[in-house]
Length: 201
Length: 201
DNA sequence: ATATAATATTAACACTGTTAAGTTAGATGA
DNA sequence: TCATCTAACTTAACAGTGTTAATATTATAT
Image (tube, rainbow over all chains, first blue to last red; front, side, top):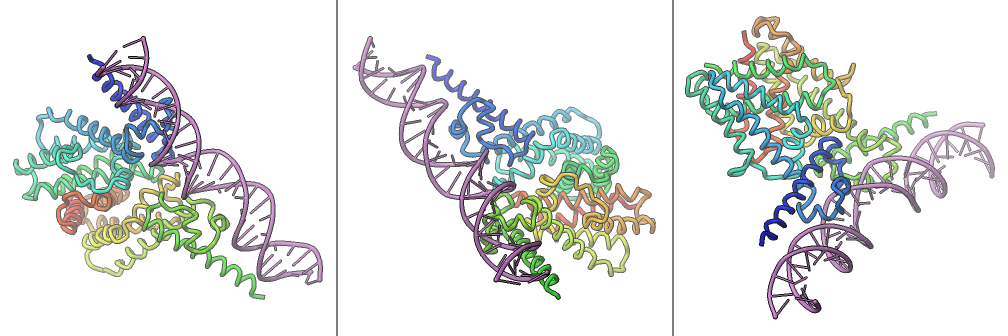
């Protein structure tokens, strides 16, 4: 009597299919240029079927972004083996963060700019992926402080400062591609280096 | 024979009326929730009249944002009399920038996030207001370097680093109001202070 | 008064997100 | 086996979108 399980599996499969189609379209055409009908066409279902799996378009976006955050978290945690000095670890994490944003610029914008516009009250709730990402940052920072490599600043503020820096440079590079930037990698390096220098003991 | 002038004046008046109505609605309801019909209703004209004054909705947004940039520029240039030490001047400019963004969060997002999404190729063209804002930053930075208060870094990169920092913290505070931030002013201070410290000689 | 130019409106097109009602197919129980 | 029930999906519709073309109105110039 595995029919119940099979049904559940099929259900999950279609849900994923929708999610994949939605992400592809959001990324290639931009959230506001993607209609439920376009997504439906892509998966060869009627538009209203999507509503059996997601509350509305914003919910669809929400799910896509949660996946993105999970990908970001995995990317960062791959660096955790790195047992070099904590400041160098933090620097690499910053690099990885920006690199992730520039590798998937549309996903990054969806997650950190578009989503907050539609989904209010995402204040990093208990156990969310967003919280886990920020916890990662906290650990990195905490290590630097414990080892007296940074001056005695509080962990929260320091984490937020670092986040501001990498978020800022990532978004600027994405949003103003025609601005006469310094060579990209140099700019990213300098942003991270400058911030870290400013935090040192 | 001042009828031509009067007509031109009236034309400009209506143009401004549209612009004001559009900004108010964009700010209170968000760009994507504002329809041409809503704007038209507000000024008691038919929707299509707007198209006699603006190419399309994106053009309307564009004009609103140019105004915002001008306001930002004026806000910053008021500080120019400030003949205190150049590092302190720069710090105050950073403060003013973030403060402006938080005072008009929707306008800030329209200008620095929404507009680039619709208006491609705004790479800081010759003589634009955006260029003038960045020039302001260049001057501030250049003064710090000339007086040997910063180490010998190139002006462009330094400017971009500072912009990244203030842009980042501004957007984060706007987009994630429910995040457990350090006390706002302290965070802003720390972001700017840290960046400047990292640039010092 | 009439022709001309500028300005504004009406009607329409092809879309949008979303809901309510209706249909179909497969599993369940007798 | 047959009726029933239920989950999955679709059709039709609503009120709204940006934008264009054609039309109407108004004010100026001749």
